[in-house]
Length: 552
View 1 (cartoon, rainbow, N blue to C red):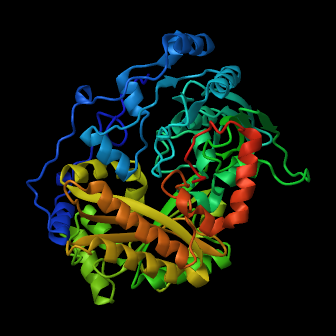
View 2 (cartoon, rainbow, N blue to C red):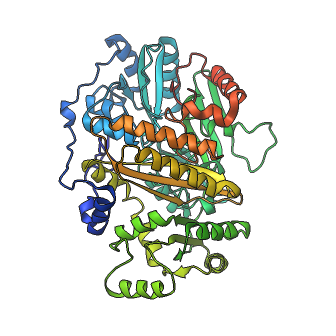
View 3 (cartoon, one colour):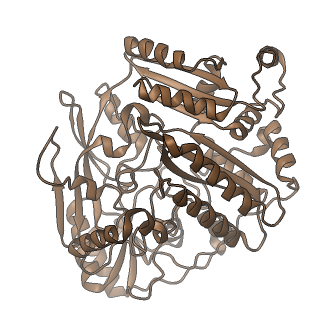
């Protein structure tokens, strides 16, 4: 199915990795903070040894599906079913690595056009099959898991990777019409040929799809300039069991409530997103980087707020708290005390004399892009508001930008060493941001350290708005052998409740899936759930679309 093989048990390409041992300062830092045994090395079970339940589909039922999508677009192979049995969250990876696949799709289908999607949904409705839409499979909140419910006759996973055409590029209007299964690199290559770029680059960009971005309301690293995906989608097609929403791209409209917003974030519970019209932009003439070191995370937050109010935010702004700054420094070969050799060490000593330290401070990485005039003007204003932070030049931000697609591979190596690592994220208004940060941090600390084991909690801001910002936590600890998922569930529940109790968002860009669904009522209310359920009943009266996601 892929010219280049993907890991079935971890992140990304099968031939690519990032061993923690390749960053010795970071590895020493983690051993010290987490008290881990460096000799631990947990193996991944061979895929051939995994036994999954046999397909529930009869030969006659499979023949009907083959006639719908053609023989080459249907797979019953165990490796394909395993690859589509989970996303890429911590819980997913623990189960995949151990070979614990309780439920796999009964068949994987690869439609090539809207007509095939419609026929699949017709068959599924008639035969009571659950349908799980699948883009890149990079989600981390249980959004593509086959349902365990006994109320469905079988589970069809519908993978859209073969619906990947660029239908039209309207250079004059700055619009492109594309199939929902197109992945980031393929889309960008096609746009670049017209002198254009999309500008939406999430960390999963290499593997995720336009349809997946829309379904989960994703955010890219340059969202301060281009916006989140909901700011970039101007038209969309949703094929549902009970009809098709085909929403045209218009620069402005007064056609009642915006139906596009019903598709955005729908996570496959209403139908399958098959096509979208997106805003595209000229390739930037220039891009510059800058890094600043604040004495505290609170100082960095105040600077970002000033930039937001003054409408001069960097196009990329990545502000790490003190602990994440130490982690980033260790990853770059700089010790937790800020020690380093050569010219870097000399520069850090000079900064230390001025009261700045990578061991205690808060690092802000920035990028500015666009026309040369825009870059010069915007960077001058933003950097002026970053004072009195210390300048670290451009190198730290350039390094992060170049490595941003590599860091997820580090998680696989840490799991090899028995280290729990996962992320949670939220967003809050400026007036509550530090309160939500402290609440989330305390909840993670209490849950991680409840058994007396060491833990490590990192946090950064990477998406900033006029009225507030996101918070993205990474937490690490020693895995509780034999109860890895139970350990994670306790931590996840504690921090999720803390976010909501403190007035933060349930999710900023990871979506709801199955993991967050039990909490949705707390943020949209019972009446909000009533509206969502009514919409689902209208578009999916048989309830076959991605059961168990979004709506608990």
